[in-house]
Image (cartoon, rainbow, N blue to C red):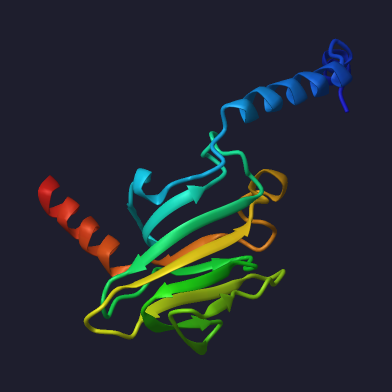
Length: 179
C-alpha cells in the first residue's frame, strides 16, 4: 500500500461518510416506489429476449433493491437467448408452455409452474423455448441482486452465448439499413 493512498484515506472520516450514506438512503426511500406497475414499464428487446424490468441494479427509484425482477415474453415457437451465468434464478410461468435446457438437460413446464435455475459456482448454461406455435409464453424471473457486492460475473461469468431470434433479426435489419 503506497503512502499517497494512506495519506488520501487519512483525509477522510469514514464513519461520517457512513452516516451520509444512511441519510441519503433514508431520503431516497421517502420518494421510492413501493408498487411498480407493469403498465408503466417499457418492453426491451435485448440479446436474451423481450423483457420488462421491474427492479434492476440501475433502476434507483424503487424501495426494494435486493432482487432483480423482470417479465419475459417468448413469441410462439421462439426461444430466449442462450446464457451462461451463476444461476440461482427463480421463474414463474405466467402463461404458455415450453421447456428450458439447463446444461444440456431439458425441463418441460407450463403456466402455473415454477422453475429454479440451479446456483453453481461454475455457472449454468440455459435457454428457454416456447413449445406452442400459436401462443406466446410469459414468465416472471427473480434473483438476488448481488451485482454491486459480487460483480456482474458473480464468480462464474456472465456470457451471452447466442442471442434470441428477434434480436438476431433486429441486428440483421440494422446492418442492412447501414449499407
